Length: 137
Image 1: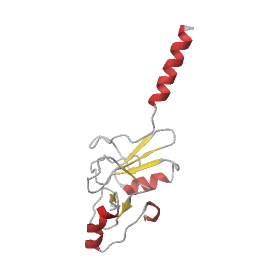
Image 2: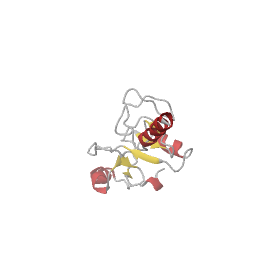
Image 3: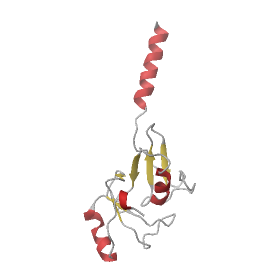
């Protein structure tokens, strides 16, 4: 009986510790799940957590976009280009800009912003349109 209860407690503990969510990226160590390059630039890094809790990290939003086609229904996170947000952004609610002046690791040149206000100055100075997750190229 003791063995049964101990086993049950270990199983419950293991199940409780499998929380699905963002896992911090180790810059300079973690590799992109799509292109395999080392992730160096926080401004363009991103992450997917699939339905089973497996984490996939990316060095560029372009790599993330290519990879999301492979695992639909996942949690998708992007970092705030401005660095104002301590926590990663939900990609589906973030806004994006696309311009060659944003030099990203894989030339996707798609910085993410928490909201319209955060992207406004760059949007206006470069004469760009805001993009959403659904309208990204």
